[in-house]
Amino acid sequence: MNPNPLKVLIIGAGAGGLCLAQGLERDGVSVRVFERDPSPIQQRPGYRLSISPTGARALKACLPDLLFDKFTQNTAQPSEAVTFLDHRLKRLLEIDLPQHDRKSLDAERPISRTTLRRILLEGLDEIVHFGKKFVSYETAPSGEVTARFEDGSSAVGDVLVGADGANSRVRAILLPDAKRQDTGLVGVGGKLALSNEARAWIPAPILKGPTPILGPRGCFMFASPVQFGDLARRTPDGEGCTDLEDRDAYVMWGFSTRREKFRFAKEPSSLAGEELKSAVETLMGDWRPELRRLVERTSPSTVKTFSVKTSVPVTPWKTCNVTLLGDALHNMPPYRGVGANAALWDAAQLREALVAADRGDVELLKSLAGFERKMIDHGFEAVRGSLRDMARFHSERWLDRILTKGFLRAVDAIPAFQRVFAPRR
Image (tube, rainbow, N blue to C red; front, side, top):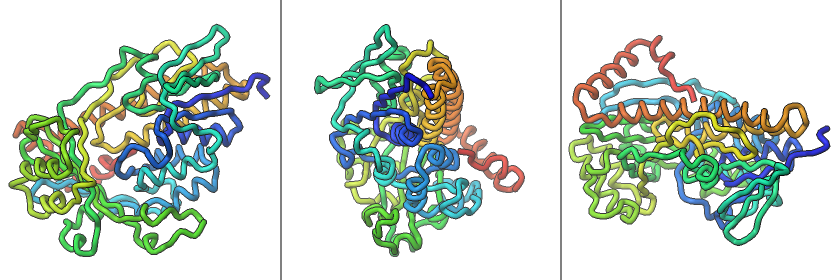
C-alpha cells in the first residue's frame, strides 16, 4: 500500500472526466471533479452520442457493475446498418452491422448526452462540484498542484487532469502552442420527431442506422435515428430506467459545407433556428424531396449551428503532474463520430495509470508519460481519420466526387471489401 496516496483533481464533468472519476472512486483513489456548469441539468446542449465497442469497454473498465448495467439498460436500439447515399437517394454502400444484445460489449449504443451524464454522475454527489469555473493552476516544489477558480476558491492535489473540452483552459496553460484550426466548414443540425407519420416517408436506410449522404458542390448530410423499440413502452421503475423525456424517438440530422456557401447575413451563432433551416433548405433545392423534408419538418427549437474545428497534432511534451484527456487535447471534426469514444478510451487508460501510481507500482511521472504517449497516438490517429473523411465528403472537385462514389460502390459490390471497410470505433 502506498504511504502517500494520490489526490486527483479533474477539471470538467463531461463523459471523459466523469468516466475517469468513476474509475478512480471505484478503485479507492481520492478524486474531486470541478465543473463550470452551475448544475447537472444546465449542461450545454447536444445531440445523442453513439457509444462504440471501444467506448463501452472503457466504461466497463471504469464503472461499478450496477452502473454499467444501468448504462446498457438506457441506451437506444442498436443500429442495423451504415448506409452511404447520394443526394438522389441512390445507394453507394451499405454495411450491415452485427446484431448484438444491448448488454454485449460489441453493440453500438446510441444514448442521449443528458442520460449518459446523469448515469455517470450517480454516486459522485460528494465528488463533483458545480459552478466552479477553472482559471489557472500553479505547481509547488513539493509536487502539489493548486487549481484556482473564478469564485476565488482553490483545490490542492497531486495530479490535475484537464477534461474541460475543446476550449480547454488547462491545455491553454500547459501547452500554449497546441492550437485548434477552423476548417472553414459550418454545420447545421436538428432533430425530427420520429412519429408514425414521419416513419412512412423517411427513407428506409435512415431508419436502419447512420446514413452519410454525399451531396453536390461540396455539401454533405448525415442522418441517424434514435429509437427504443420495446424500451419505449417501459416506465421508470427504479431499476435503471430514466425519465420518459429521455425516451423520445427522433432522427438526428446534420448538414455541412463551406461557410461562404450558406451566405449568412450574420454570424451563424446569432441566427434563429428558422433562419438556419432556411439556409440549409436553399442549398438542398435539387435534393430528393424526402431529404429536404427532414429539414423542413424539424422544429426550429432543435436546430443549432457550429463551426467545424480541429486540433493540430502535438508531439509528446515534458511530463508533469498536469495532463489532459479527450477533446481537451485531440478535438476533431465529427465525421467519424468517434470523439466521445476517444475521450472514454483516454479515461480508461488514465485510470489504469493513476491507480498503478497510487498503489506504488509505478512512479507517478513515468506512469503519466506512458499514458500521454498512448493518448497522443490514439487520439491523433482518430483526428487524421476524421479529417480524411471530412475532405472526401466535402470536395468540390467533380473528379474527387466521382472517385469517392466509385470507391464506395466498389466496396458495396464486394463483400470481402465490406468486412475490411466496416467501421472500427
